[in-house]
Image 1 (cartoon, rainbow, N blue to C red):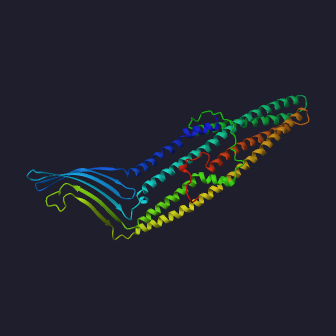
Image 2 (cartoon, rainbow, N blue to C red):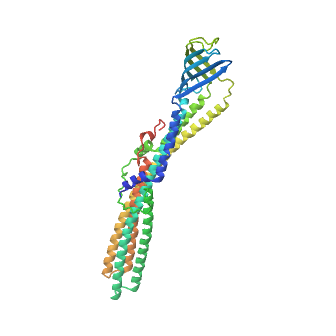
Image 3 (spheres, helix red, strand yellow):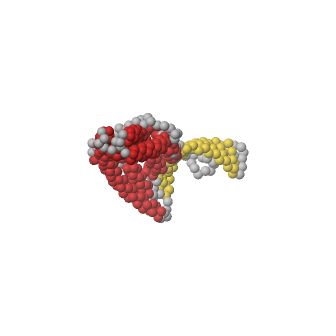
Length: 443
């Protein structure tokens, strides 16, 4: 299984990620609820009233809809039946339309659509958290996969080492018989053989634990056996620092969220300041009916346009002023947070570029050290066969090879892991959709 296959399986089957994705449904539902507040509402009406011997019945239908301007439009059609005491039926159909619009307080889309904007913001934040969870899972898979691969190579190295020490032990015992070696040499090689076998047993246990961790990340059963492949290094050798910072600030979701929080705080301040405006509502309407609803009514036959203005008086605005102060403080806090996150992104990029370059340097040194250790072991074996060195020189050289090759394996894994972490720092590990990226003049 390649690393990319392991990543794809994890993104598809990891249970914790699936749970996070399911929770997005809740945020989408909140947005749908906010949108539904602007749907057309249909309200049937029916009333019946008895005054003396007269029966008044009124029934009809009213359609109403909130407007993005903060107002509301209503359209109604009714039929009124008046049954007089002598049984005469007077039918009164009527039609009306009215528009109510705040002139100052609660006027305009900034206030009217605030609940929708807040729900959209919450959904974007949830989607960013989900995207960040996906990227974090990828890094976990990379670490687990490379750990399994390293331990797999370590087990092969352990087995080879045991074979070599076993052969050395056999030759040493033969040399003792002809006087070319001492019993102490045999004891030393046997001790080294016991240590090598102990390392093999310990590495097998660690390998099994690493296999289990990787399988669980991919949503598989913990006893699944996964055969890994060598992972090529992510190539960031020629990455320019300034370009890297630009890429990170164009892709990092934590920076995008900080910018969104600032935008949300700006909107909330505008809404709070709007509440300091006078509460004046204008109502325009038109009503049409065929005749006066009742004999002697002051409403003229045929109806006509209506206009009305209402307002609030005696309001101190204490609560509204406090809300404005709170919104101003929140805005300033989010502005500082934008600066802090931007500085953190810059530090992250610098540190991870340095870590990547350092890891490649360490790997180069470890490779040369491993090659030198193998050459030393080869020379020690030749000298031992020629009788010009004892088994101590061979076992010491073998121990040096084990340490050097283990260090080389660790260094190679470190380059891969640091490389993927650098990609995550740049925000390019799993490139986010355009709607989730940073988008503000504050950049």
